Image 1 (spheres, rainbow, N blue to C red):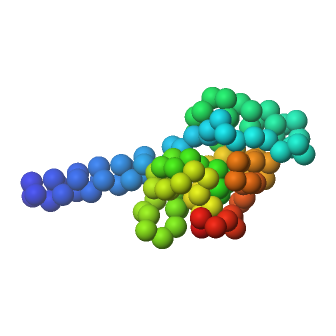
Image 2 (image 1 turned 135 degrees about the vertical axis):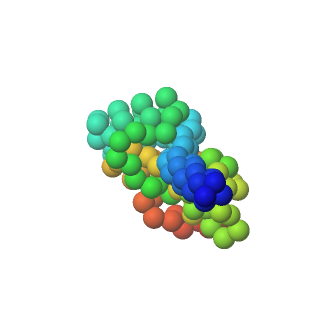
Length: 123
């Protein structure tokens, strides 16, 4: 009976850890800029997010091509596992959470961000 209880507790602890680690922890970076055609609301949201450097709260979009190496939220292509595994800055097939409705207005040194994988040579 003690063994079953220990296993149950270990499984519960593992599940809790998985939930905690699955939340978006990646942040913005100061190499991101905002497109000229962004609305004032989007411009304000992005400016605040980029300046505070924290993961966005509330509703989010998966935004591809904006993370610095090792700072993606998940998915970084073949040979990687998930969070924090992107290998180059602005990797085309790695995403980071952004405030909802803002991804389309983010510009990186490599080009625009996207709600789907970016078509770049590093993908």
